[in-house]
Figure 1 (cartoon, helix red, strand yellow):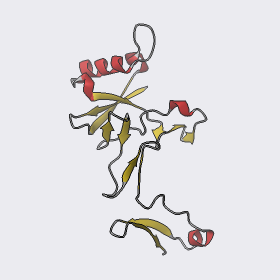
Figure 2 (figure 1 turned 135 degrees about the vertical axis):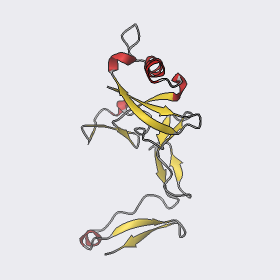
Figure 3 (figure 1 turned 90 degrees about the horizontal axis):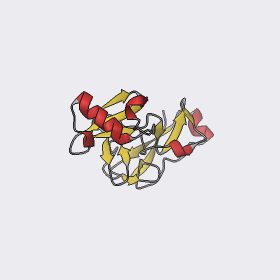
Figure 4 (figure 1 turned 180 degrees about the vertical axis):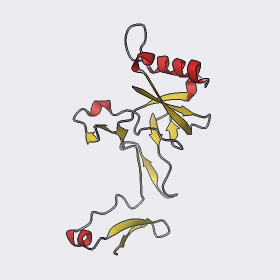
Length: 148
């Protein structure tokens, strides 16, 4: 099955559809996004340039098969699976989830938002045992440790 995101002129994902693989195959028998876009335009009555193919199995620029990281990462497609409210970045060919915090920036290599303080710190065994976790503190621009 082929997955397509319907976007508006501001590149916001409005919905997703699933169509048969056969509706994306060109006369030479090769999967072709433009064929799927034409199909979506004709059947779903939305301009073809506003249908973007997406991969259900791509998250943070990694490809998964049956929810397990795939050995074949060549199938990672367009950064992230499209979800309603995401933004299509045509320049980088990435679907971006909504920005979690004002200060965070795009990391194109991982198709993820990152904090100005870097990745969330790993928890120690003692912190895990104490049910601790980190939360982002936007005003302090830091990862704060919360212990229950």
